[in-house]
Image 1 (cartoon, rainbow, N blue to C red):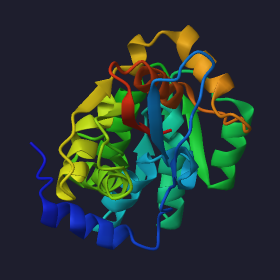
Image 2 (tube, one colour):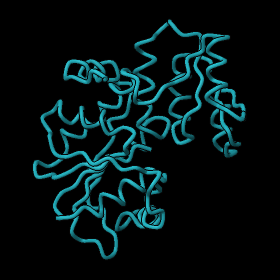
Image 3 (cartoon, one colour):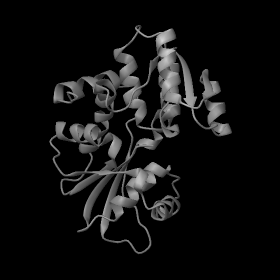
Image 4 (cartoon, rainbow, N blue to C red):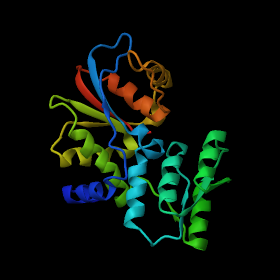
Length: 246
């Protein structure tokens, strides 16, 4: 189990200070027919690399400074730019393994960050082979303590801006434990509701993606749209929080 005690999370926040965006908390999300939930959501999708995962990857690389010859990535496409920017800022070579071709704009962005992309049948096996051959670290997920500590800073930051009457916080299930730990560091003990974004009602998520905001349109990734859609279904109304991670 990851140690996400207050000293660990505060240490991660100190390392990341000045290197990550303090993302805003946006309120007043309104969808036609939905009036019971006062949703306040943290816009981590404007974080460097377009994802709150940048905090986790950057923290890992800061803690490993000078010890790695390079990194590889075989995770979700939504997180790949955050990983590539973190590697680029550390002047580390990065190799992306994907089972499907990436979109042209993603490939262009990765090329500008000096990352190499290879389409392979088994990305995980390819990353493991590169680690054996070259020592390149496959960037891990929230199961890694340093990545988790970086993600926990999202919860710590969010908790200082949520109203006292907030009754629940909805987050992607993959990062729920880390974000909950960060909230606890600042004394916020409201329930954290993990959202399995692989099991989302895509119709409602798309509706949220296209309709969020009264006077502005915000384009959300499918993961963030899924979390916000789940939060807007919260029973009992009141103030509800949500993290748009990517």
